Image 1 (tube, protein in one colour):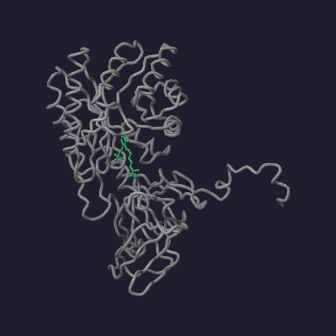
Image 2: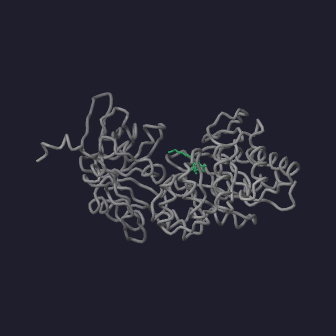
Image 3: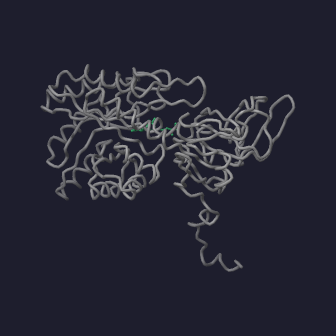
Length: 437
Ligand code: LLP
């Protein structure tokens, strides 16, 4: 992936940095991020849209990986930012991300979160349901503040990696139903309010998608709905947001499409579905995984092993489901290599265990590697998305550091947690504190 290569010492190098050196300098587990690759991914989406000629915004879905340094990179690349909580919004604002390019998502935004968004005058709120719509209307009215909104719709499509399913059914916790009139009512509510400015519609059909059909069918359905709104309310749709979900390569055999392929299919879908308007709406997308996923590599130290003759050879690393919960949560597959033995051929098949007290804490089953010795540095690829952002302190394990590499330079962008961080929020009530030395 990206700027990775095997250097003269036979070590894995990323962004011009020897990963064995990084492991020594910063300790393990360690998340390593390839800055160049993140920037290339941002640019690939922007370029694809520029070539298509339609108006667009590419909003990075920061749930995939939100840190202040990442917000800086995404801002420098001219992208917008999708946030889903006060924490993600706070991170973006503190990093100096322009509020006007921030979009706020979520199916249960609290009144405090909405106030924070209104105070900051963020670009757009993606309204998910009628409770939120009414609350936002009354807040905006009280403040006499105009607010740009998109309505999130449930198009009744589910996409999974290789196939998409038209569920027809709209059993989802997200969004306004197209089938039962709720979406139309929401449009009417916006039209009647002088403070809610409805820009258009949003939908998100799934994640790690390797096919364009789902996006096109979603576009069709939203186009039909938009044309109904046009006839009924004289409403011109200015923005269509088709969400994220563009696939990446985790293991050999994964064949994601290029940003170009996804974008041109979406733009074709737009043109086919909005012939009722004289001017095409702008297209917004929200890639998360495909911006940062392949740019991340996690380095671990192999600490113990266990051979059960004829059954399995386990090796255990110093991290696991606390820094990467995806295998345990989703049976997600990953590839690994020995960073200090990049030149050696694979000789054995091992299973990589994490260090949590839980049998399900397995990072990789049956992974081909060179001969493994205790102290080797194991590098697991494609860990940039939904790893650090979903990390936990289970077993009171400290979260690793995140290091950004580029042109031979390595900068810590998230510090490793300390043991004192682990107890930082603990409080011992007075009556239990007597015997502490
Ligand atoms: N927009 C919306 C409204 C979303 O809900 C999501 C992801 C995205 C954009 C970004 O999707 P992406 O391009 O990253 O696929 N934790 C799971 C993934 C959950 C995705 C949730 N929503 C995982 O680790 O696979």
